[in-house]
Amino acid sequence: QVQLQESGPGLVKPSETLSLTCTVSGGSISSYYWSWIRQPPGKGLECIGYIYYSGSTNYNPSLDSRVTMSVDTSRNQFSLRLSSVTAADTAVYYCARKSTGGWCFDYWGQGALVTVSS
Amino acid sequence: DIQMTQSPSTLSASVGDRVTITCRASQSISRWLAWYQQKPGKAPKLLIYKASSLESGVPSRFSGSGSGTEFTLTISSLHPDDFTTYYCQQYNAYPWTFGQGTKVEIK
Image: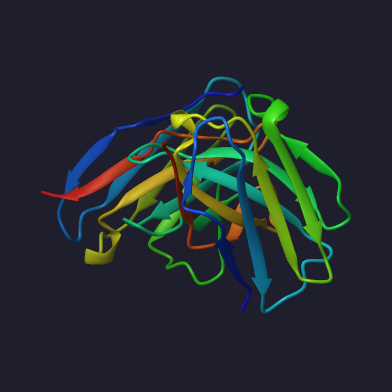
């Protein structure tokens, strides 16, 4: 059974960089696409972008200038960096795997709440 | 970006009721639509993909239909575990976008 687990600081100061890592267990990170999705408290879901195990990426244009994703196949991990954060970036951040049925998501991490505050 | 609009925002129903949630896309998305169930404090769970395909392990009381711009999620007989929030997601055009959610509450 594939499992995903987000890790990283739960509190980030405004203007600094949010960094999260997703560790995949129970399966290989290879041959799949992996995504980051976020959900502000009490609100809906927003796709941040995705990365292939080879390292190719595609980011949501609304966040493109601030997002960087990377993958480490040796550790079965992929990561998210979001720069110049503001309070609007406060959200639960999920990592997820692209389903074989298309660009929806069949495995999700439990989510990591990141609060942007001084 | 393609806008996804769900209706209703809140639905009140009883155990055993048949309920239908609608999701409308701002432009045609063919059948590239998924439905998720999200319980409080948990990650979304994939229920339906490609508009009507049931994800493995999902009970058969859940079904999806539609194409183009209008889609529905139907729960044939509500179980106590089904009272939570549901989201649709289009994956016809990037960036993938979600509806705002429909909360199914106990009447």
